[in-house]
Image (spheres, rainbow, N blue to C red):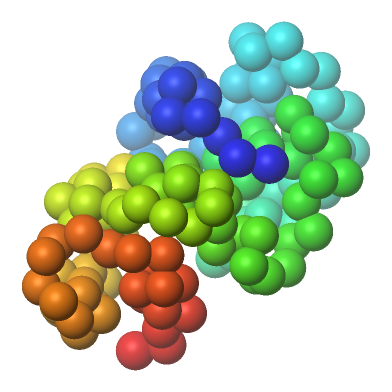
Length: 153
């Protein structure tokens, strides 16, 4: 399921509010509070299950990118396969500004902001984008976007 920009902003605000120690992550107790504030009532078992399934870095807490996946799964159970198939690429493309039919583009500046500021990643996103943006127009097409997300280097 695709989150709208408004839902992503709502999640970002909730994440910032409930990351009380400003660590950049939310623990299981903070996570419960987040879902209760947005009208969801997950069980303790489901909270621990969410963390174990989504905690990619296995630190016992949820960072913002992990939080968005949990929110999506809680709101639309059974919709996410967890596979990195084309549907996931299209969802990400749309969330960044592209169109569901894979037309349109994502602006380079938006991707840089998402990677560096929203997710706090230290990857060389500028270098990666320079390698995939073959025409140098600072507009990332669906094919370029998918290549970026599939890149291993």
